[in-house]
Length: 114
Image 1 (cartoon, helix red, strand yellow):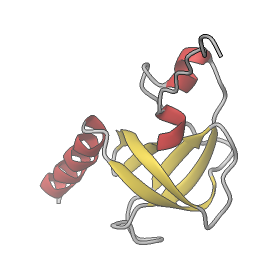
Image 2: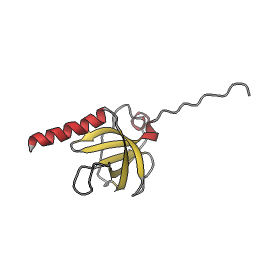
Image 3: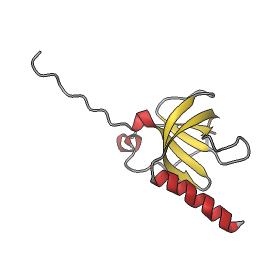
């Protein structure tokens, strides 16, 4: 059983390392004491923006049986929302995700002459 746990932890870490994108179904808000470690290159970490934690699951995570996915988002998410996320970390069996649109670097260029 210990070997299976190692494999599961490695798989979760691999998904984060590869920055896999998945749809996450939000189940609700995380508890008040919940904490996640976001990577240092995360935009929210760099700017010091507070994030809201929600609990959800990917297609391969059964409710109340399997691991869960913690979504760290700038805005609050509602239960039942299906959010496209990028897996950015893992904590044992669980995954840590960020909404992909919050990670996308958006650059606007000034319009010249017009």
